[in-house]
Image (cartoon, rainbow, N blue to C red; front, side, top):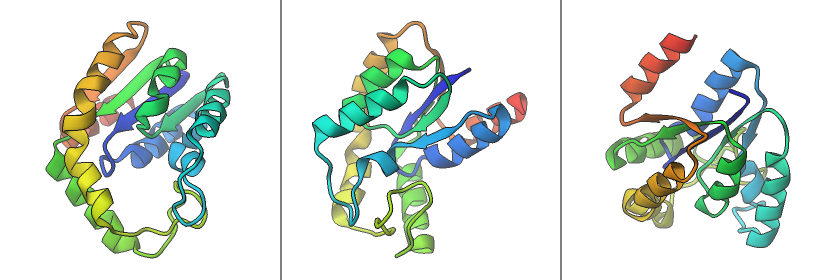
Length: 167
């Protein structure tokens, strides 16, 4: 386990898991949210984002958290391990809302500078639509990379048991 991708919906706990796995493995973390968003939640040029992330993937050791489907295929080509947080929508939505309310107006360390925690309808709708829009595509993409060790979890309790096992 040298190049780990952590994928799943917003609110699933990708960043939390990246810190846990880093503490266990010593691997450095890359939060894709810090690479994607510009100050004030401005969208990047997607070609630039793909180029920037492709160069990040060339490192020998990393944990990268973030789904970002547009760059997932290139990331999976370099990954050796994937943690897929395949949680139900209601869990992700509740976790995201909880994170938003407890950190409202503050910039999280795993997010880009100048991007304070906020709540908007677009974010909520993204979480609600995530499974329908991305789940099947993600499963197909994972199947196209047989070299990967994939750990897929349908509930946080499954992940907790796995972490206890590898700690």
